[in-house]
Length: 142
Image 1 (tube, rainbow, N blue to C red):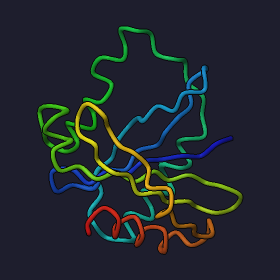
Image 2 (image 1 turned 60 degrees about the horizontal axis):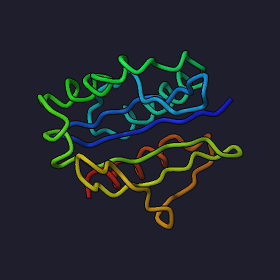
Image 3 (image 1 turned 120 degrees about the vertical axis):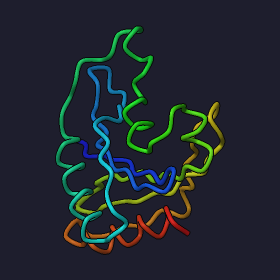
Image 4 (image 1 turned 60 degrees about the vertical axis):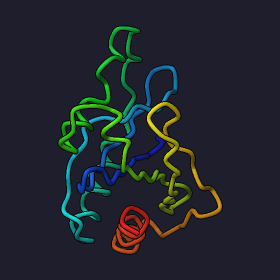
């Protein structure tokens, strides 16, 4: 089963969430949790989010998409998607062949979203949770 997560820095908060798969194969970011910018806490958050990502959920109906990002806005303490995106940074986290791959993403604004910066991705052995957490924090805070 694919294990994926995302992490955001938005409005001064670090937010980590699993990316579950829908029945059509689409990745869906769910259940964001705010973590303090401390590597040990981020490592636990990553481990938890990756474990929670290994499920398949029913693909949302057309009407269910509206508001699907609201939990992330609430976690960041902002009212709108535009406010969230104003200063947001994002990294994607994927388990690939016994490694955790962390890929920073470029913020293209509220209409375009994020774009992976593939050549900046870093790999860590799955067991090196703290190394992955430090890299994640570096990407989100520098």
